[in-house]
Amino acid sequence: MRRLPPLGAIEAFVQVARLGSIKAAAEDLALSAPALSRRVQSLERFIGKPLFARRHQAMTLNDDGEKLLAQLAPALDSLSDAVESLTSGTEVLRLRLGVLPLFASQRLFPRLGELRSAHPELHLDIDTASHGIARLGDGLDVAIALARDIDPSLYGRRLDRNMVYVIGATSLLDGPNPVTRPEQLADLTALIHRDMPDTFTAWRYAAGLPELEPLAVDHFDSGQLMLEAAAQGLGIAFMLDSHYEDAKDPRLTRLFDIQVESPHSYWFVCRPRALQQKPVRMFHDWLIGAIAEDAPPHSPRPAGSRDDPQSSGPRSG
Image 1: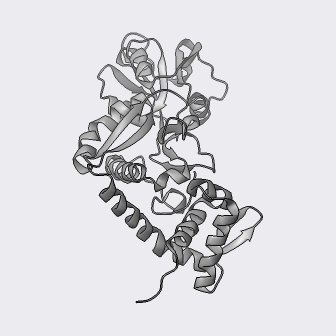
Image 2 (image 1 turned 30 degrees about the vertical axis):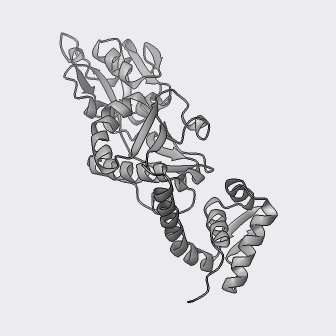
Image 3 (image 1 turned 180 degrees about the vertical axis):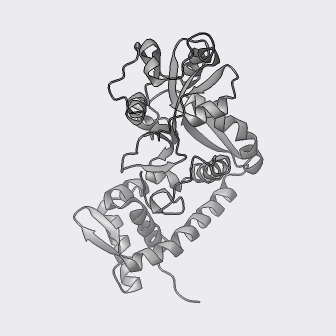
C-alpha cells in the first residue's frame, strides 16, 4: 500500500491554505505557530516541492498548493463528517443565525420547511437583534445582513441585487393632487432604514434632482415597521424592490417609474473558519440554492470567483 503523509500534516496544510495565516491556523488547531509550521514543512518535504509563497506573516498557495488543496480539502471534510456522525450518536446540529426581521419573515421563514425536510438534524437559534456582523464569533455563527460590501477579513456571499423603490400608500395616488412627480416629495416625510442610510440620496441623484429635500426624514431599524408606516400614510419609504414585491400588501404602491440600482444588498456573512463547521456549510449551501431559485429577473445572480461558494478561501464583496 502506498505510504501517505501524516494526517496532522494534511490538516495543517488545509487550515493554513483556508485561513491564509500560520497564526490563525495554529489558533484554530490549538497548536503553537512553530509546531504548525513544522507540520506544513513535513508535508512539503513529503511532496518534494513547496506549496506556499511565504510573505512575512501571510501564506499564499502557489500553483502546486492550489492543485493539492482542491483534492485534499473535500476529502478531509468528508473524513471529519464521517467521524462526527459515528461519535455523536443521534446527530443534532445547531446554528446561531443573526438575521434581519423583514428578511426572515419575507424570504427565510417561507422556505424553512424545505430546510427541515432536507436536513432534519439542523436546528436554528434565530437572533433578530441589530449589528449581526459585529457579533460573529461572539454569540452568532452566521449573519444575513444588509450592507454595501463586506470587510475583506470575513467571508461574504452576496445573496441578491436590488433596485431602490419609493413605496407609499395607494391613497397618495387618489384625490385632487395625486403624488406623481418627484418634486412633490418636498411636502412628504421620507422613511429611511438605518442600515440603508443613503438610499434616498442615491435615488434623488438618479432622478436628476440632487437638491431635492423631503419635508422630514424619519429613521427606522425595522423594515416591517417602515412598510406599515408607509401603508398608514405616515411617509414614503425608500426600500428595496424585493421588500415591496414580497410584502404583497394592497395598501402599498410603488411611486415613480425611476430605475435606481440599490447600493445595498443582502449578504451571507461569517468568519472564514466557520465555513469548516458542518452546520454553517449545510445552511450556506441550502440558502444559496434557495435564494437562487427565488431570484427575480431584475435581481441577477452574482457571477465570478468573489461570490463563488465553491471557493475554499475567505471572500468578500
